[in-house]
Amino acid sequence: MSVNMKLSPEIAIIEANTLTCMGLRGLIERMMPQAVVRTFNSFEQLMRDTPDMYFHYFISAQTLVEHSAFFVERKEKTIVLTNGTTGTPQTSHFHTLNIYQNEDNMVRALLQLQQYAHAHGRHLPQGMRKPISGTTASTDPNGLSQREIEVLILIVRGLTNKEIADHLCIGTTTVISHRKNIMEKLNVRSVSGLTIYAVMNGYIEADRI
Image 1: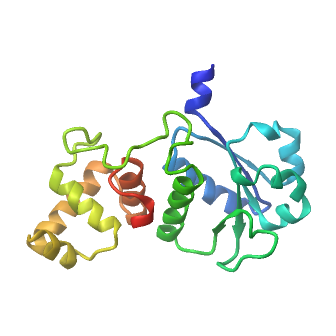
Image 2: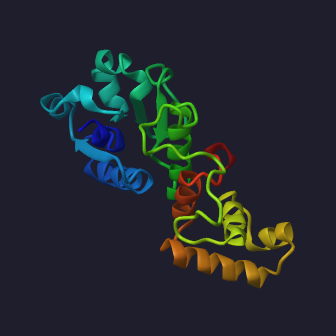
């Protein structure tokens, strides 16, 4: 029982907007497939559950204002969903996540929150810790070659195909070929998906993307 709990941290999303809940839940499940993500449309629904069991709470700013006493005691576990980059006095002592950004930026922000909120992974549950640079071509779970890993890292860092080609001293068509092979091997079709894979497998730190 204790092993399963370590491998399956539970995360709560408390937000009245159902679409926000669904979208955030999908992103978190892609990033942390071991996690169990539960959604609640109100704080009252959370309280009818088991409110202290959660590893993280993603909450709306309104929920924080109305129920600050509960979340102040759990501020290291709480991420407040905001409608922009400007904070408020109520959110200044909490981790925040701007939900009005595109998918790639949202993924980067979530990965950085995950890394910094847990001292670069040291406080993450067992089974979710990924050592930086701990995976090589010989151990890549999807069979990426060393060159493909190099290309993957540069894609995630935001370089164009030409910039990657110049950096690795190879042709642009070769970069495009590597990029296609990477996406086929990983069954991923977006930069955000590549970003999740690169960070979660220890190829790059979240603060370098």
